[in-house]
Image (cartoon, rainbow, N blue to C red; front, top):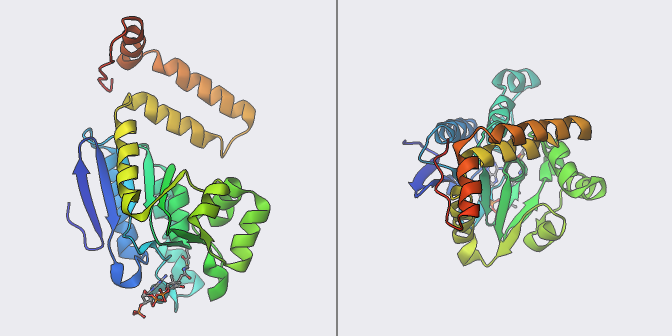
Length: 257
Ligand code: HXC
């Protein structure tokens, strides 16, 4: 796979997708988003990959959508570009997505982080929804996902003031999972990816699907969905293997079946 604005590396049973427009702090232009979605969808169907890391560089995960690219657009052009359809496709990736964040994660960059399932950050990471400062507002899920992640008043604070928050605050607010020194953030994300890649893939997939269901259903509907996925796993070979390995006091060997 060869792309202009991202680099895809596959190692062991996970992949690292690196956003690579360092000259503009990894601003997310239309081509980059097209490439990102293409790479994620292709990795999602690869049996060699069980978990995907999205990262940037030490200075920026992504400083938002490319402001210069959209500055002169009209509403109708924005509508016709339909760029958010791509973001919906990221939401539909079935394998776990880990954001490994250092430096700026702003606007669409912060929204991309929130589209991931787990977030490991460096001590230097900064998160924010600064769109208000350029006359707009979050458009790729920020008002919804941030509010669900940190609650109404903190989401209002970030979105209405446009202020950035530190990695330590983001951790305290429940936006991210872990903060480590800058030299280790990618290694830490890789170690999480390896751990998840060592789990039975079908159970991982159905567990991710069930947790995400909590965001768009009632508790009743969500419990029903969870139960059916739980029952479904009893027709997987990995469930039989996992439970017999437990009884036989040995390490399970997953077949992803
Ligand atoms: C285009 C960007 C950019 C962006 C930075 N650059 N962010 N270009 N779009 N979002 C470019 C700058 O123009 C500059 O290019 C180079 O990257 C380095 O940036 P500087 O501003 O010189 O760096 P610094 O002084 O360190 O300031 C860093 C910063 C600032 C605080 C992150 O760049 C900034 O405020 N960026 C915009 C952040 C933002 O508003 N994001 C939200 C975008 S709207 P040159 O050519 O001058 O060297 C959005 C909507 C999402 O995301 C909707 C869904 C997709």
